[in-house]
Length: 354
Image (cartoon, rainbow, N blue to C red; front, side, top):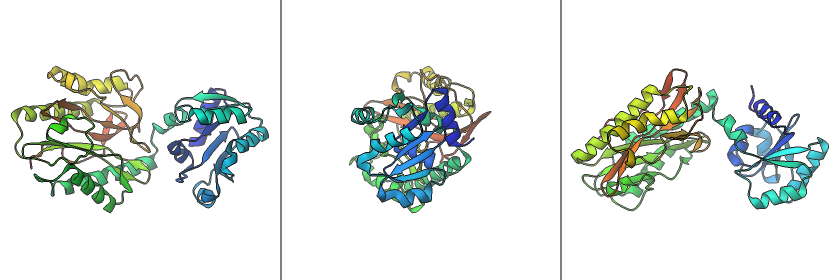
């Protein structure tokens, strides 16, 4: 079934005549349009992409399944009202998580249709990846793996976290990435205890654990991989922590499959780490969806009752963080399968000591 037909079924299930889509990633998912501005209108019979003159030709080239309408961007809602009148639209949904209060006021004032806030109607479609999407994400993961191979050849005491981040991004770009998938987390030594320690001017020192959480942005999609390495021989304590995180990840990868809840998937890493005495040092969820955005549904956690389905692409990323000492996180990207997972990130996970 096409994305448009799936969306229309969802709209009909919520008694909606139309939906107004403004979120950039949802717009791209449905239309293929890569421009930075545009509004999508989907009804039971029409699929329109409204753009201003800057994007008319690009939209026509990229969006064969959509009626492209060039508009005056200062008359967006007047144009939508005209479309709604033509098609007798009485109720229209809008993306409540992406529409500002100001935009809602404009819509409410200009449109005669009853407006209904919709939560994640397009995002829910995006959870299951198409074969084409999976191939792109696989290439993004390969680009990340290649960058990791390279970075191991240049890391040494004295290099800064920022230098590592720049070198990773440069290498990923050389292999086809548009750039980094997100602000990289490069955290060494005591900073490795910061789960979101973005790259700083701190230099890597002998004995540091070094967390590198990075990914490639390739053809609109993203990979997300974390590896933790040691610079020189780490303490026995940190070696123990590393092994616990490694074992918890391997346990999760061996147990995850379609049909379980996000809470169950989270428990495969969390229960293991807790049993080893470090549950209070593992404060984030076990993973999340990736795709056009770096964080997509679902979010595996202790409260997630969403069901893992075939062809979801998720991260699995247990970690332990000990303040003023250091931390370890290891993360893979996986495709959910009926009876297991396919791991997309192939960089070695055993402890590497440089």
